[in-house]
Image 1: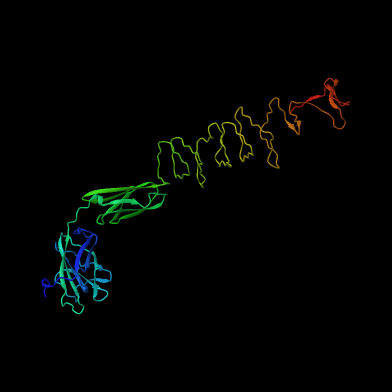
Image 2 (image 1 turned 135 degrees about the vertical axis):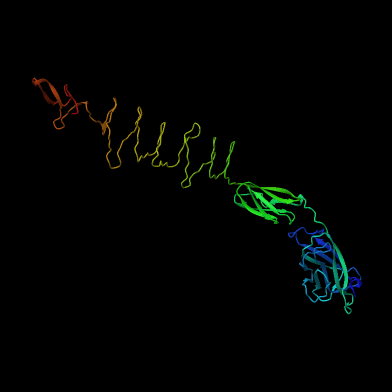
Length: 429
């Protein structure tokens, strides 16, 4: 029996494509297509089925459905396989992609529930047109009588010209996190056709992601991402922004006031105007230098230093006004106070522990002052003194009469009190 004379199938067949409508392909990167074939029993009798063969026209013509013999199939409780060329199965002549569907249980009944057979990963041909899928069914309503030849029908499916992709086909460009900390990974996703090539740009660099719909990176500061793609000969863009709560900046210029309420780490900072810190300013890392021209306390208040101050070798400390030290002051180097009119006041002047105090300059004791030792005055050149003998008591005095013309008498005054002529002047040789 020739196929035009073959009886129609006992089962009903309907087809829909995914995506729908079905478009002729525009290139090798077009997404694979699936066909869903709904098989149902619209009659009043139970139909038993052994196999169904689907033949999809193959080629590059308008009536061709697929451009390559490729694809897979599946259906619940059925096996769906692509028939390789050269098999023993009787097939129509010509170029086709053949699929055979068989129930896993022999001679299965197709009742009112029907079955859905899916042919997927198909490569649709590039010419718009209507293709006709040939269906060969081996089925019966009486399992004791099976037909010698399969029943036959065709299903028409149309391939429409692929439309230009509108710019609005790409949407929902967003990040998985809209606020992060520095160094955190950010994942961007979007919806759009898989036929487009996408580029994500940020930080002055463009990153091609091909036909993928996601992109991941790490950021250190607030970043605006731009998703670009070309459709209809025009480049279109979408943007989304992710903020960083603790940004790392390579440079910052501030033209107004800056208020920092917490800790801030800055690798380099230049301030051309006033900088006010209501919190602590810390520079304690090894090798860290804190350079400052003038260090002052708050306005009308003194500057407090609550740490030991080490002035490194080759440096000095200049104090224009007074300095008060409430604790010990140790100078391992020289202490100079040599400017005219300057006074160096000290209560007790002592040498190093266990050693004498060395004075390597003339000491000029100003008028009205004295030098004492153990509470007693030290006699100096030009002083007037009285001389008392410790063993005999009495004061040494010069008598009023002379021994000779050029010599006079010196006596000890026994009563023990001072007497006229007992004042003597000390002179340095």
